[in-house]
Length: 110
Image 1 (cartoon, rainbow, N blue to C red):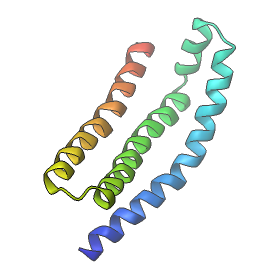
Image 2 (image 1 turned 180 degrees about the vertical axis):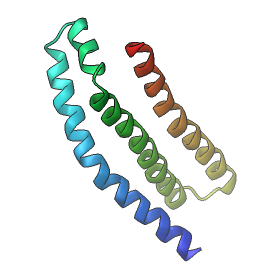
Image 3 (image 1 turned 60 degrees about the vertical axis):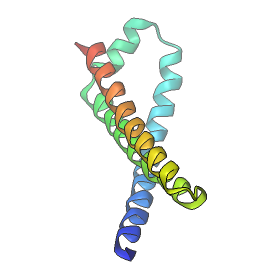
């Protein structure tokens, strides 16, 4: 049990560190995209570097979301049945949201 909790803690910290530069790139790009028209946004997402960084951001954000909310549920919810249901909902959302974002990116660039 200790090893599992330690692994989750390490993965959450590593994902947080990885998310810092990805978030900075995302915010910088978002500010830049606000001032562009639709064609400028398509040009931005036509770049493989931008798509790769944005995809990594979505994947690591989903992972970090799952780990963080899972820990909150484990710490503050006492009923095991509710805990199980909430963990399944969190797992579902943390998997669906990045997939929807990545599929949306693919639709934009194709």
